[in-house]
Image (tube, rainbow, N blue to C red):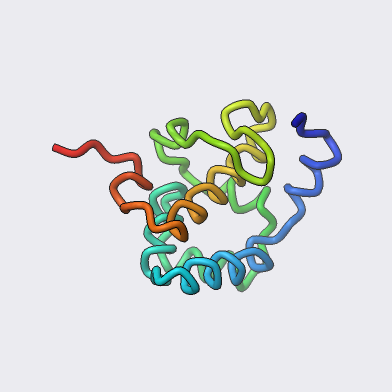
Length: 123
């Protein structure tokens, strides 16, 4: 499936605050915790709990959210299909970053082990 410019614009304008409750509900329903969700968000973006809450309170768009993020060096290892799109084939960097986050939340909800979600090597 090809991502269109209109789709990219729509994704950029979505507020993190509007999506966050859905992420939280999804992981809690599957027996995971808010702390685990925040661990995943922090791994991807570098945002701690205070920054996450500030971005929610300010109703920051995904565009602003990812402009402020320091993307993890291993984010490129996030692959697969989310919402019908193959993540590694998405050309628009912002849309790809949003889908990275979606994929991590999905993996958390599906019960994947945290070290696998965070793309850590087992030593």
